[in-house]
Length: 143
Image 1 (cartoon, rainbow, N blue to C red):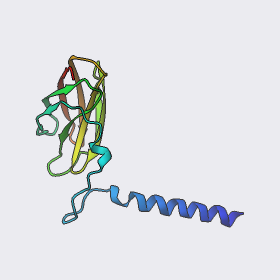
Image 2 (image 1 turned 135 degrees about the vertical axis):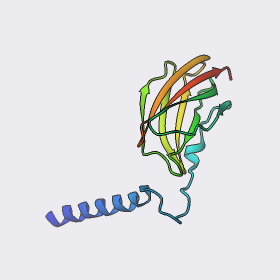
Image 3 (image 1 turned 90 degrees about the horizontal axis):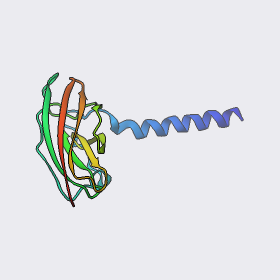
């Protein structure tokens, strides 16, 4: 019985290690991170953003125009030539939800407005490391 538990634990740890191998930072000369279809599905039909250039410790302004069809609109940001480690939601949007995640070599800040919402919204995300804050003004338009 004890051997079975140890074997199961060993297999679980080995599987977890194998799955996490690709989660670390990219090594110089390594192939670019892959993009997954799941990261590209579900986008709003209307999504217009400009890629901001974050500066450590500063607050930068960004704008986004998104359709109110229930899809997300993504704002890609980078820490120089690599993605940020994390994003903290500092100011919540009044009419939508936020997802901060890694997509390829970027950190992407996705905003999904409430279905059918049209009008203005804002939110602020702090990027780590560096503490850059990205203040985003959103205009949600009818789909």
